[in-house]
Length: 238
Image (cartoon, rainbow, N blue to C red; front, top):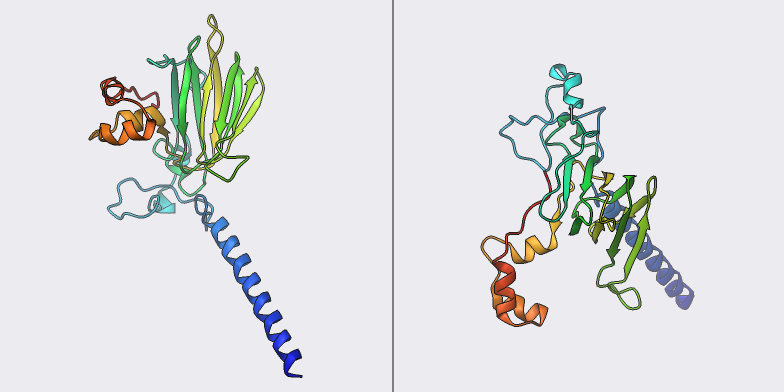
């Protein structure tokens, strides 16, 4: 009887631990992206002195249609910059009604041979649709166990094609056509997805990261790092 009781207690303990693990997993998933709204909308009150994760809700009695609207002219081409691209992002800073809704949109213009250089969105998955031209796109997986460690996945996209970049992973888009521009629309799963352009962050930080640190990290001479840090790392997000 004691042996059976011990087995039952062990089984009960194992079931409890399994349940706790599942609850922890569900709880983590629930907080892994923008919080879900608890009402129809929560238009951002940009003038509130209160600081929260996101924005305080505007008084619903003062909300009007313009809080959900922007004459963004996303049908008009933009002038690409030094790297050959221009990202026009519409997020909660442009449309206050996006607050708590967990979505934003961007138009991306690419010059011939232009690129949206390797970058990451720390708070959003991105789904990209090519409207005009051709794009070579790809992303790199995280430092997970082999054989998927830093695996590079890429694809050539044509007009009408769609590609997904998982949240937080380094990705890029490149227009391989030397004669024709390209255009894409991207939807992102956050009201404020953020963007970290790898070269800008590593070599253009303010203040600069020590060249001793970067030379060791990239296994190159310090004068190579000094040269890269001396470049003008232009932002292509507007």
